[in-house]
Image 1 (cartoon, protein in one colour):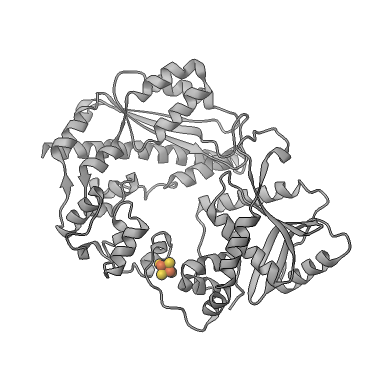
Image 2 (cartoon, protein in one colour):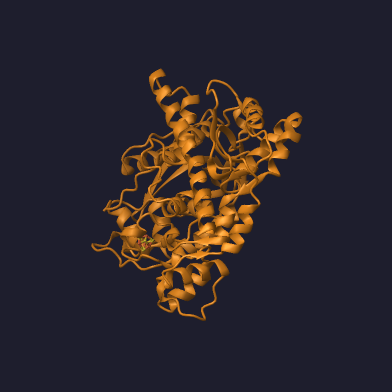
Length: 483
Ligand code: SF4
């Protein structure tokens, strides 16, 4: 059994079975392409943060015991430097501190995060490190969080990249809570057998759900749209875990009630009148639009803020009424230069006309608004596109439900149900996160010329599939009204 790390401790607080599995090495979560990319970004952000303290000492990672001994040795040496990645171990718990700055009153603990938003969960992470350091007998003077500054722009010096927020009081409060539970968590995750898993609200986001408490349950109450923690708690207390078991009289929101009716009655919901009205609003020819967008912690383009949404690709299918004439146009930016202006101009050109612009979610609207803000001379033309936008997802949400949606309305959730046989399975790129990472690596010159050609093709095929899927879904919606 390994030692308790921060990640295990924080998960064990939510679920001791999960903490036990992580600690015993029984569960290895393989990160997705997008998660790996964000992890690498985190490594880069930490590197840049360390540059703010040129005299700091990076304690290289090694075995926990020797790393902890080395850290203790450096901390107790006369006139210690700022320490990066110091290791602490006590009572079966291990922690690594991003940065430790010596101060008169003790050590200033600094946790570095690669986001721009302060989050409650960061306090938990800092409190864990504080707790383990305290168990090792260290005196901590204050605790700060270092985040990315949303005012940073490419080309500015690295010291403008970060903002520091003092969280000492919040962390101290959380430490009190951890002091009362760490020993029992340490013991339960170290025991010879796994604590019995039990359904809780956190299971909803757990990667193991389908192999754990969700195993064999087809219509779990988690399929209820926007299920709140309190509603979940009420159902669980009554012993209800699947939608089939919800009795009448339980108060549900209208979308939840609809899901329940469809599941219990094994039927679909189609508001034909409402759907017909919505579909009749669509002007022909219909333009189906989908963007691919990148967001990076450290901006890749001048004037872009950390995590600014940069569109780099789009696909448009244009269909005449009855889908008689289908035109496809697409754009994929040259990764060697900033093509935002070119993309905006081409977009205006490719969407020229009178017909409705069909999108899936409000995301595309936001991208067009962003481009209009960036290029005031194109604003009028870009703004005029907004009036033509029709969101297919909204239409489905209000007028159609099939039990096979399992409470989801994303294109990936509705497509296999509404258009069986159409999927993303045959594609090299199957989701937006991979598309984004692929394009970022193209910008960074990661690929050989041969790979570049291949990746470019993969991106074009993926984005094209998104608009083709919208065409197919729209066709099916029209069929539902006809039948
Ligand atoms: S599905 Fe729930 S009970 Fe099972 S490991 Fe995950 S959080 Fe724990």
